[in-house]
Amino acid sequence: MNKVAKVTTLFWVIKILATTIGETGGDAFSMTLNLGYALSTLIFLAVFCVVLAIQISSERFHPFAYWAVVVATTTVGTTLSDYFDRTLEFGYVKSSVILFCGVVAVLFVWNRVEGHIEFEKITTRKAEGFYWLTILVSNTLGTALGDYVASTAGLGFERGALIFAALLALVATLHFLLKRIPPAILFWAAYVLTRPLGATLGDLLTKSRAEGGFAQGRILSTLIIGGLMIVAIILASRRERAAEN
Image (tube, rainbow, N blue to C red; front, side, top):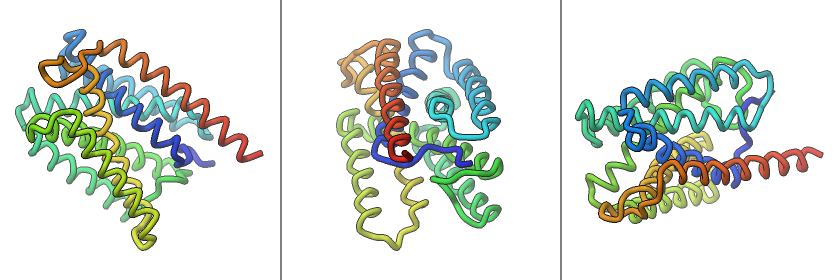
């Protein structure tokens, strides 16, 4: 049976909420709780392994298990990207290039092994492994891209969010107007772009006013966005069940 969420408008709303949680939650551990990037990454990797094991061992799609894995990849992506950029001093450009090559490499191997790249119907353990590996690397890439645009390029969080929202709108336009482009390519392009959008939105909420943010607490912001995400997941599940009936 299919193991992944159906791609609808609500899917993308939930994904953006999940990526925003990844930024605020990751920063809450590494900065607010002062655990540092390395320890926070290890904690989130452990959480990721647990929820991924639950997801993979399941015989069917469970929305909360699925989205728990997505959130785990975004928190890992936040702290791991910050560890590369700041602790190892790779810088946002070098990190983004390396991680972009990583996403392309995973998709290339996936296509060579399976003969095609999926995103809507994942039914085998092998395809699911490639699916989650692509998500993990792409969410780490998205964090680096978001930080580069907002900080290194000097565009700030608001303009950074607008840029990534515009790029997402462009991908959506291509999906509706150019049917020759493989849907899987557009899906994964949009998936990567939702991460820096969530990263810039998360930073916009929680960074100090001197840094161009709204200075909202990271922990409180994470809890509020998490609540909104739970409501959206329940709504999406009800709509899907209604459509099936």
